[in-house]
Image 1: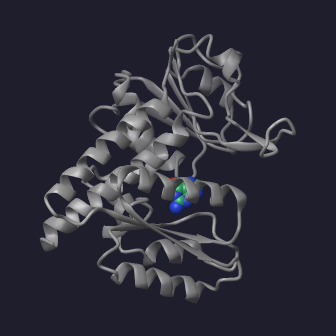
Image 2: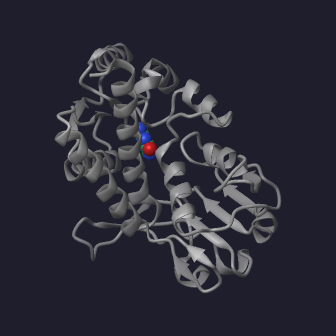
Amino acid sequence: MEILDGKKVSNDIKDEIAAEVQKMKKRGEKVPHLAAVLVGNDGASLTYVGSKVKSCERVGFESTLVKMPSTTSEVELLAKIKELNEDNDIDGFIVQLPLPPQIDTQKVLLAVDPDKDVDGFHPMNFGKMALDMSTFIPATPFGILELLERYDVDTKGKHTVVIGRSHIVGRPMSILMGRKGWPGNSTVTLTHSHTKNITQIISQADIVISALGVPNFLKAEMVKDDAVIIDVGITRVPDESRPRGYKIVGDVDYDNVSKKASFITPVPGGVGPMTIAMLLKNTLLARERHRNSVSK
Ligand code: GUN
């Protein structure tokens, strides 16, 4: 069994990005600038956005954190997005999800300029992804592809079972694993809450990508020998022994499943850190595209 070490690989990617930023600086060019919009005080979202901003510093990007109160109206958020779309200094930005209930998420995602949509959530970018066109690939699926690539995991002709059909992970992952090329060329089954015989389907998987958010859902007896296991679950479970009062638990019963797997991602330290690294990669890409389109 080999661990797909997202912590290590994400650090390597950040080093690579930092080296690119140094080259940009030497050439006297503007460095990439990422903005993150956070509406409200959701604890997990605060942590994620904080890590995103900190990672920008680590690679030499500029970053802007836009904090808005949980009472923000849809009109106010759309006005902020318009401002970011029009700000030539910002190369890419994200609106952290979930948003408070008074705001229509679809309207918000549609308002983001596709050229600055480093999350890859705009329908234009999602459509391009589905059609194999060059675009921003959503950071979590992009991070999983990168892990599979860097560990030389064979995906061709394999049966990939994706658990969960969220717009952020499951749905794009199912498309990407079935695309022509590598990582891809898999036969994909996308499972969800209405799937019948889900345990039987999982037992046939060569690659399992679990993005369910149910701690310890995936047990050793459910998976095939030598399966590749990708755990996207990040649930906070109360734990008094930790200074924060909680621990992060994945969808996979790691101790037992890892004994059967050929490759497996740990939680934490697997997919999570890769998401941030790939967001930075998309921001670098956005900067390069803007530079090439306006030569500034
Ligand atoms: N919420 C959970 N994951 C993500 C993500 O990748 N991007 C944004 N914007 N919000 C999220």
